Length: 392
Picture 1 (cartoon, rainbow, N blue to C red):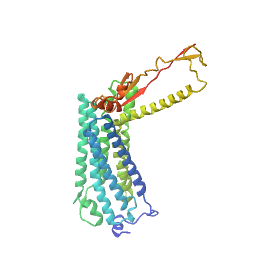
Picture 2: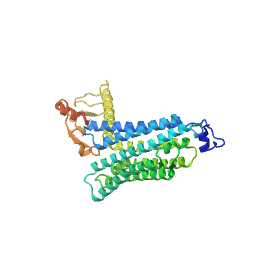
Picture 3: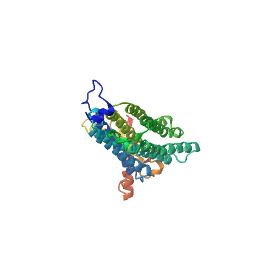
Picture 4: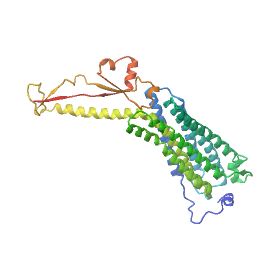
């Protein structure tokens, strides 16, 4: 055991297993959440390209958030390589110093990352819900204020915590300096962070309830927005683990869950920020599945009609089922176009509405100009055929 570690933290408690390690579990959770957020951001950009909408400030802000999340995930994994996730009595003083140096950088990057996510969401609110009523404008201003000030006092607080600043991580190797009450500071900032999450999640719900749509659709949209409250739950859990970490003697062992929940919370926030933008892709996927199933049913129906026992009477003879078929509605089946092709992104960039056109497909609609082909590629065509039967 390192003499400095023994001098600072004392002897290990009786019955503790010093060979235990949470490193692999911590890394699995961190990498999984990073991949989830990365997929959400990728799908968001795919949706923007699919709709041919220009990239806005909120799109680039989520990229900044993803970069920050990647950096904190890398710090978490790097910390595991030098003892984060193991008991502190098996670490060296130099490794503990390195872990707390990672923690210092983690706090600074984390504050910037979650702020980028919240600003992205607020930019999205400002664009989608314009024009704003006075009360909604003031609520949004409140959201901007708490979001913009959070990283400022977070950065200022962590930099002013120890004098000199390097004493934050060199105190474990015998350096001289002083530090403030870190427990109160970190728990207080985590609570403020949780409050910011609640405010950003609650802002759009009153406005959504005012939309002119049926009650079921309102509830569905509110449920999508309420997914953000999982971020708030993650914030509460994060506060708990921060308080345990700051009050327990086994810092490197207890720091692992702090890093985990400090990854889960921004990853969920980033995923939630991208969810409204995935609605057009979800619609296309739904229509594609429905169209595929419809084609399969039509194929089976064609096979059945070609069987030897199927009736092919022209109307003068009775079929085996006592019915005859008319092709009155089968020559030119109508087409329902659920389109994103000609509507502009500013009209409905997240697919809250569907433009439905009824028409008869023709060759020119499929072999038109380049622009027409591009429009057609961004439309979902649902072909409906009708069959009339008459009793004989």
